[in-house]
Image (cartoon, rainbow, N blue to C red; front, side, top):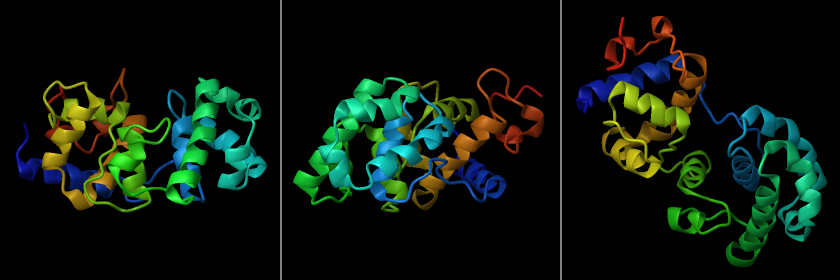
Amino acid sequence: MRTQEQVNEIVRLLLAEYPEADCTLDWRKDYELLFSVRLAAQCTDERVNKISPALFERFPTLEAFARADVGEVEEYVRSCGFFRSKARDIVECANVLLEKHGGKLPSTMEELTALPGVGRKTANLILGDVFKVPGSTVVDTHCIRISNRLGLVDNLKDPVKIEMELRKILPPEHSSAFCHCIVLHGRAVCQARKPDCARCCLAHLCRSFSG
């Protein structure tokens, strides 16, 4: 494992490299972010951003989603993959939010993960981006890969185990931003097949760097 000084330096450098890092999904209302994250499973944010404007225009309120015919929602989200389960989860989630939460997103991990189609990754994103909860740690494929390469975790692949390890070492006030930076870094520099170590701001701190 890395020392706390090394961890803090990794966080500092990432925040400096990606000062505008934020969620790359487009949303205006809290529940739109929730639904967009569901659509983004096994799909790119770019693709979701292309189809979500028409979806949110057709169903402009949570009540409209709750009343929606699942088959019609499927047609709007078909290009995102796994469209049947995603459409079903969105309609069911809208109903649960209205019936159990007064049309508002709940603000705890337990309540969020009880919603249809919502796991810890989605819940952490909502907690960090909507509710600004310190320590919220989103573990996606980029985070799994780069956390292992940097030595922040030791050969772990399970997202929940990685989340728990990162929670122990990341400054809570920067956890959410760190995860957004990791996504950008993973797309631009530290890619899965061919990391561009020569351009990496973290190369001198990376255990996988072979330069």
